[in-house]
Image (cartoon, rainbow, N blue to C red; front, side, top):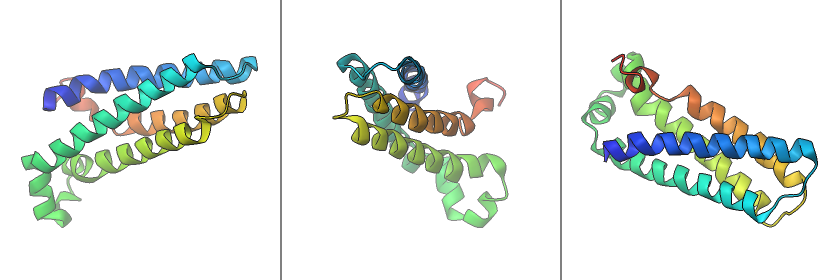
Length: 142
């Protein structure tokens, strides 16, 4: 499960980044939202929700988070435990909610305003995701 969560993260980052820039380009160029735009947004949403589901399973199976939850006060003093037990899952949940809201708000809108809404919400989500990726582990530093 960890391997799936690790590698799907690359797909999520790629899709969310592509859709963010696609929305920016669409908004700035003044073009209306197309079926192709909506499909790319849906692919981003599905990848993120799948990734979040895998993350939830890992969260409840992980010995690290179980130890953190058993002594939450002590875990909050350790930046690594705090990242895995609280910050990473909560920020990813917020990012998933924002992307879901973007999809709900723009699903039936074919105007240029859909691009603006998607760009704003996806940019916030992308920044949140990037802020709480365990970079040391991703880059092999720990």
